[in-house]
Image 1 (cartoon, rainbow, N blue to C red):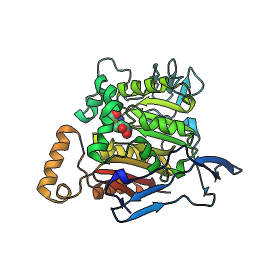
Image 2: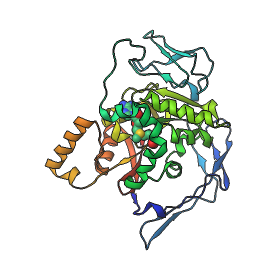
Image 3: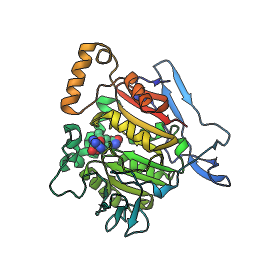
Image 4: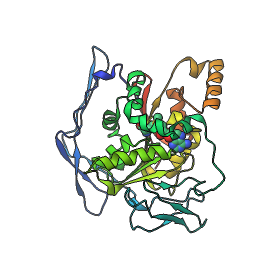
Length: 351
Ligand SMILES: C[S@@+](CC[C@H](N)C(=O)[O-])C[C@H]1O[C@@H](n2cnc3c(N)ncnc32)[C@H](O)[C@@H]1O
């Protein structure tokens, strides 16, 4: 059910560094004691009604069938798993000098200073895959430089986006089945939310994935600037959302912030996400929606499809269409949180 709230300035979420609380997880042979930061969300639904979600007082036992963390990368051509040559572990620091080799296709995927290039055409000398404007624009160095220096912040002003920290707080409940497991931040941009995932300590592996090499470089720059950043559980990967380099049913959670409307084909992308999610794995995404005439009036709907075909942008999808898209791709339990044009959706891979 959608929780609709009209004014985001009235959403109050205490700092993630507030109180701390203990949760038990039954993922291993014996229950593991896990420290999870407490968060309470207070949503002012209108000027007269206040909805308050308080954390439960009893410890929560989560049936947490998380995947083994480091074996999820696969060849984007045949989806077979890869052999890592060079370094023994994947991490943001070990990409340079490492190679991932597919024993079936005999293709190698190389790591550079900042990331692994896992696009299908990586290594091609003459061929360059053309992408629609909504993908290509983010490959410009200037755009990736500006992204966290005003561009992303503008989403809050005109799009109702709460901002990275609050978005993370809002999605934490949705991500419970993936705690202590792996998470892919798909279309991570400059990694503003991937970095929060890594710093939270809630996941054993965070993969920040984007098609833009410059966004990944920018992410690396931000990480480098923080001396105490936990680099060992984060890996940066360049890949197309429509051809994800992960073994089927190996991923515990996929997050896609402010990205679905930029994807060349949301249906191919969500189908790929569904393929890589393990049963019970979670998909959480934020995007813009526009309910109303664009969704219902056939003429306007056609115009919207024309705009999407030219620009590659699917910015005017309605909530009903997003739910339909998830269901069509085998995801269940659709839930949403809305604030004007902003929506956070969540759905899981059926068990
Ligand atoms: C508006 S940014 C969102 C960045 C970040 N997730 C956030 O929450 O702000 C959209 C991102 O989608 C990425 N993107 C666009 N097309 C893509 C594709 N085909 N495959 C993977 N990423 C893509 C862009 O490179 C860009 O970084």
